[in-house]
Each structure stands twice: as structure tokens, then as C-alpha cells.
Image (cartoon, rainbow, N blue to C red; front, side):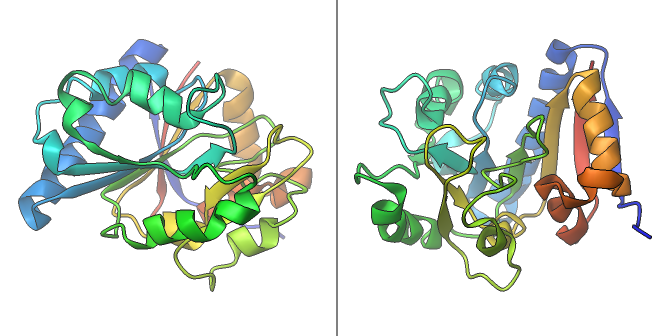
Amino acid sequence: MTTALPLTTHTFTDGQTLATALAERVADRLRAGLLERGFALLAVSGGRTPLRFFERLAQASLDWSRVQVTLVDERWVAEDHPRSNARLVREHLLRDAAAAARFVPLYTGAATPEEGQAEAGRCVHALPLPFDAVILGMGADGHTASFFPGGDRLDAALDPSMPVGVVPMRAPGAGEPRITLTLSTLLQTRHLFLHIEGEDKRELLAQARLGLGEAAHYPVRAVLARSPEPVAVYWCP
């Protein structure tokens, strides 16, 4: 018998309202980090879903020059590629007030993520963990970050004993080869958010939370299960 995993859900009527609320919440977490440590650290996801959130957060009033931003995962493509997560972040988040932030990309320019793993790992290892906030998304196959069902290094990526760093990932549903922060790295955060939109994803997440059928094996369930605090879900239709 599976266990229903704890989470907290914040529901909004539309994507604009969600983006504003999530941006305000994350900005508050960054300000708290600045006040406590003198700097703040943020990890964000790519894709289309977070674009409105990025644009709202970019306008937040805080000392962005003391904020570091990195990615949860990255497609192994150059930053000028249309599917680059780094390109999305630079165009939609690192602008306005947030242009002063320091960005730490995962793509290194190596031919493959396997060849770039060591360099990307050194960059991640140098980050002043813990993160003040990590924002995840979720795909229709139950993946989050680049934790894809059928991924060639999925077990390693989800292994709680893995050290801080990154692993390459190749999977049928991933498209390009990717590189991703390990789950043990992502969980070194003071606040973990999951941003999803649409009725289909709400139902998928409910199945993963309850461990129903195939959803018991969705990678996102591993994140929910291993997070030391309930994941904060921000959802709208």
C-alpha cells in the first residue's frame, strides 16, 4: 500500500495571477537570504511554463547584484539555440532589475554532457548552498528537472547518497541529451516550489502523490517523497 505524500497547494484562477504570487514569494525568500547571509541563491527550471513568472520576478525590488541564479537542468545545446534553458533565463529573467544578478549556466560548450560533466559539476560545487529557493516544473510523463522515466542515469540522479553535483541524462522523452542537478543537490534548499498549470498536470500530480498505478514510479514522486518539507505547489487551470 502506497502513502499519500504531503504537499501544500496554492491555487490560482489564471497564469498571470499565479506568476505574480510566485514571484512575490520567491522574492521574499531571496530578500531573507540577503538579510541573513548577505547573498541569495536561486535555481530555476526552463520550458514555457515559467516565462510569466520570470518576467514578474525580474521586476522585484531587491539587491540583485548579490543574487546568484542557476538552472535545475539544461538541454545540451548552445545558449543561442532556441531550446536552451539558459537563453530563456537570460531573455526573460535576467533583465530589468534582475540583470545585475550573476548567472551560473550548466552548459559548458563541451561536445557532450558526459564530457562537460566535470566542469559543470565544479561550477555547481562552488555555489554557496543551500539554495534560498528552487523552482521545479513537471512534464506530462511525470518527469521533473531532467529526471525522465527511462533515463539512462535516473537511478544515480535520484540516489540520496549522491554528492552535490550534476549528472548527464539521456532518455526517450528528453529530446536532446541533458544535464541535471542531482536530487540530493536540489533538496539542499530552504524552499522547494513546484509550478504547474493545467487540469491534466493537476491530475497527474494527484496520482503521483497517492502513488496510483504507474504514477507510483514517476520521478516527481521521488522528489515529493524525499523533500524534508512539503513541496509548495503553485497551480492554475
